[in-house]
Length: 258
Image (cartoon, rainbow, N blue to C red):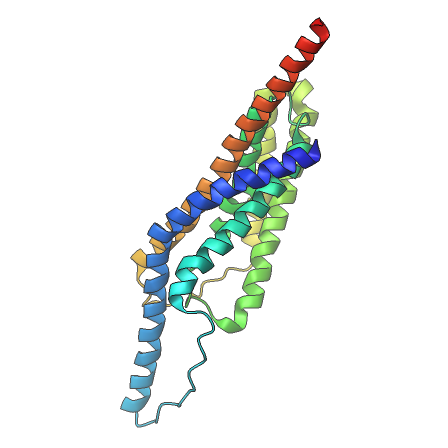
């Protein structure tokens, strides 16, 4: 059963990957090109400022281009997006196998949809409210390790808080009812994550000259890709799993009739 779910999740991940690639190619890549152009202009401006002060600009040997920008925006983007989405589809299927039957009296489709919505909030939206996605050239290379650690710490804490909130909801279900239990659990999650967001250090390394429109559109592209991935995997995986469950049920009924 788990193997079937895993394969189904990976196949659905292929569909999500194709959709995400198309979206990122049209919406995301132009913003990356703008960011790279901005970085080049910034380096040129620094060199001109040094020359104006009478200081010779340091001569830096150009680094060899291992992968061309055309390859990065084409097959490189496609490969990365597909691997990410297929892996995500498989992980989602395993998470579904653990969650099914433990999230209340929900069918496969409702369970997958709720799991996708909860995962999107816990693993992307909330962490990105504190540490939003930035395009290339934004941020000090010396702090990339610290920024990465903070971001993944936020994801881990958010995921743990969401799991605890789900367990709290189940505990309160019999006493307060489904609606009130969900409200209390959601409030507890929000309180915890607000406190965590205030406690963790802020990272703001976006250059003042960076185009605000390009930054905004890049973050919209990042959000859009995540929405496409979570929605596709949650809805398609849930529909296929529910259809398979109904087929098995009908087969058992026919077998029992004979």
